[in-house]
Length: 178
Image 1: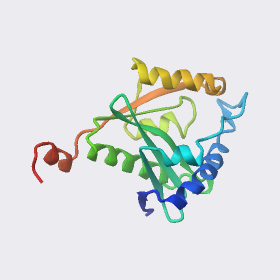
Image 2: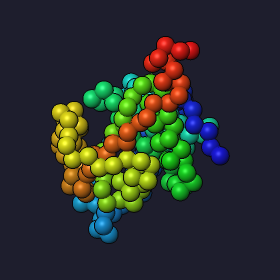
Image 3: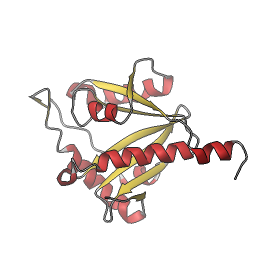
């Protein structure tokens, strides 16, 4: 069982390399090679400014980067080292991210991903996310940015959302019970 924890400064130093390594798994979509390269990931500075960073393991072998969008939690990035793929680390990070978001009082979590990559949209669907077609202005802005940096040239992108029911501790907090 791998532990999920808050990122520390040293973890942030390794996150760009983890993201690059994870991106190396995406070499084709629907059997066709990628027509363009994936854009560079977030810098250490951008990562350090994230709303929340969760990491798996010590030293970290994967991470989840969370931001706020439209008053909800937004899973900006999920990355796991390729040699650790398929071990439940990504799922553990997603569940920990959802738990954290619930404790913060968020009622939903969104993300954007490739529709036709097994470890993207189908994986997130298995984690309780469903496709969203009616985009808020902020989600539309994310999608326009993705298109501008060339992600749509690689493959179909989708927006997904998971409803987050409040945790028992969040409900007690909202009710003023400690």
